[in-house]
Image (tube, rainbow, N blue to C red; front, side, top):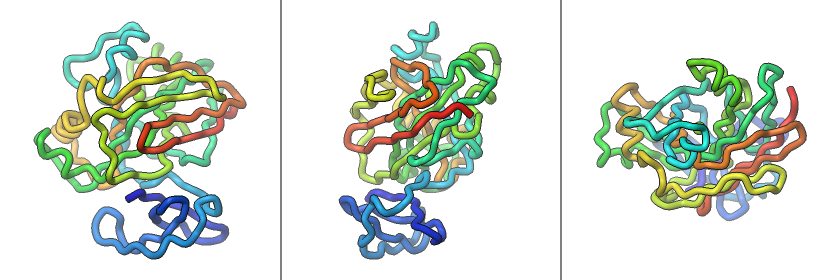
Length: 253
Ligand code: MG
């Protein structure tokens, strides 16, 4: 099932599901009890929003060897985690704004796991039970500020720096999926999720050993090599084979 959040003109925001290119409303809570209504609205007639509202966004740094090396780092011995604030979230039809404080804003194409049930201290072999599904993410980063600051809160936390969507796919298999990123049509990143240093189950276990995860919380699982700059006027698109494409325009703030 593909889960979306959407809006049509003058209507409140709704949860929905996708059947081919048709949208149906979902009544109830997509994380527990819900009912799917008939899919009778064309996808092109709705505005897609970020597909859930996380209480927190946990990200993993340097989870692909080639990417760690391209920035002069090694893969850490245990997962390196940091947070992005919910205020940085944008959806698949929103624009990434380049803040004046940075002259080097970059894309990071990532597979994102969406937590389905509250959990703490999950064992790796039980982690799948707590994942609702997967979505496509862009962990937008002010690389110059990431290098100058010890903590990454500023570099990772600007408004519009957390794009994810266009839907949550509850049937996607994260074991070996191709992740690519293009900027204004030019290929930038290509990698497979099989090359993660720490796989999704290990990451859920590790993060949940630190903090309680809530339904809708996100785990950005790290980016493969090929990160690079975004400029005013660009369009950045992240594709994960079998999952979908997330595309955003880029503008100077
Ligand atoms: Mg990242």
